[in-house]
Amino acid sequence: MTKILVFAQLSGGQVQKVALELLTKARTLGEVTAVALGPGASEQAALLGQYGAKRVLVNDDEAYANFLSEPAADTLSAIIETEKPDLLLIGTTYDGRDIAARLNARLDCGVITDGAEISLSGDELKVEVPWYSATTVVTVTLSGATKLVLVRPKAFAAEALTDAPAPQVEQISANISENARRAVVLENVVQQSEGPKLEEAAIVISGGRGLKQPENFSLLQDLAAQVSGAVGATRAVVDAGWVPYSFQVGQTGKTVKPSVYIACGISGAIQHTVGMKGAKYIVAINTDPDAPIFKFADLGIVGDVLKIVPALTEEIKRRKG
Ligand code: FAD
Image 1: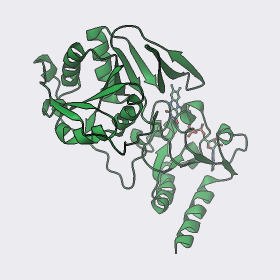
Image 2: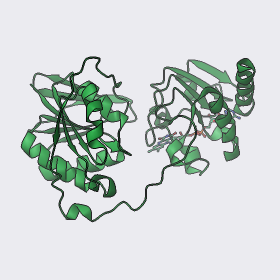
Image 3: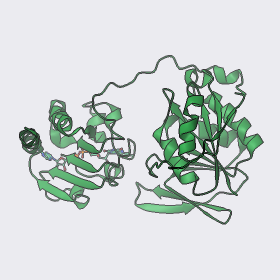
Image 4: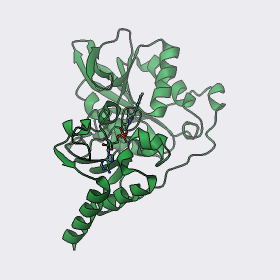
């Protein structure tokens, strides 16, 4: 049976959602072992079992939280050498990419980045990877003993098993070298925001240059507050300094898959739509009836976003009483 390792990255002691997505997929492909490193790892083991990990290898060392990704790369290298998995899955996050690059160089194992679908045909691994802003999807494979695949967040839905047995939890040694303790994280700045996170919100309201000026983002915030949504943005307005980078949706920003995505004054450049076209229902508001965003929209409104968004907010308030 295919031996699969899933690196379950933690953030603030909690398993990142992408790890649960990877486990959900991995359990359909083979026998799954999760690796959780850092403060809180042991406590998260049961959760990893609920999503399909038969075994969970844990180490709660503070080093994984206080240093950059080298400690995790050291530990994972050692695990790969002893466990000899066929496949190692890591979420495409900043840390995930960093760790994968180090493993790739150290172990000379092949790596596929940005995987969106994974299948096995006999022993042959097949990974679908979107290229050129997802206008083309290529299927790639890897040779070699351990194959390393970085998978996009939200490529798979995370689904807990109803009857998962408790996983076998094993404390492992850290195997962290002195070199790995040289680059230290001095400060973590968490962007304060009200409401749901952009990646997790059921309703996302994003703004582009059509909002004319940064102050008008407050119109989107007002609407988001009424529907418990999150506010996103295009790169154009992020680059202009209107809103922080954490708002950016698209190829070089976040991928969102909400139930409803409302694109306000956004032209619909491919680099933007690649990050939002998976939304279930897309509404676009744009003064230009030929704007490319309308090709993606389930509902298109040709009009001035500065008038339509406040009117929508007022109407929702009125209906809510
Ligand atoms: P514009 O293209 O200028 O569109 C503004 C729209 O607002 C127009 O359609 C206009 O008709 C409409 N409008 C104007 N006034 C009003 C009004 N009053 N009411 C309603 N509508 C109005 N972009 C991203 O978003 N995310 C990415 O991750 C990203 N990555 C990129 C990576 C690379 C390598 C490159 C080259 C580009 C990337 N871009 C990305 C930029 C992308 O190509 C576009 O330039 C950008 O998405 C355009 O942003 P926009 O829609 O806000 O602006």
